[in-house]
Image (tube, rainbow, N blue to C red; front, side):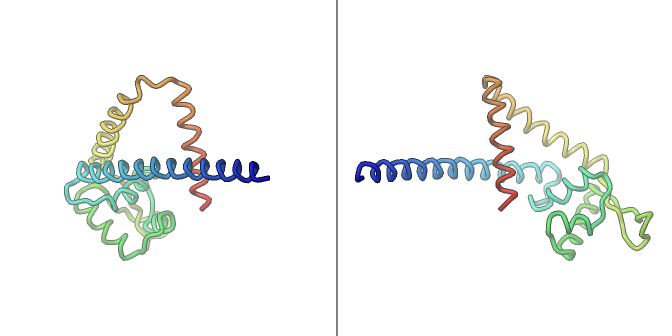
Length: 158
């Protein structure tokens, strides 16, 4: 019986060590991502902080979106978002147009400048990332994609 408990404790410790290693790698990835977000914000405009990226990213992704929709999607308060929208407008990264369905609301649209800077910032990062993975086997890339997708689903469920 002591042998069984010893094996269970050993497996439990091994699993705990694996969790710890996975957490360390995930936190390292988050740190690298944070650095990239700071660099991208500066490439977009030196006056931006990384906090603007989810807002501008949504506007770019949707092409036309209201402030209310942004608030709902990224859980940001209206006053903070309003200040961010004003700043993005001043920097010529977005424009406001009256919403055709509700004339009291405004749609937010990205400018060509925003598209160009966003694209060039990501293209540079993509190029650097891909150059570091050129020697990876296809199976390793497939495994990475699978595991990241699985992790994203698990994290979203938290």
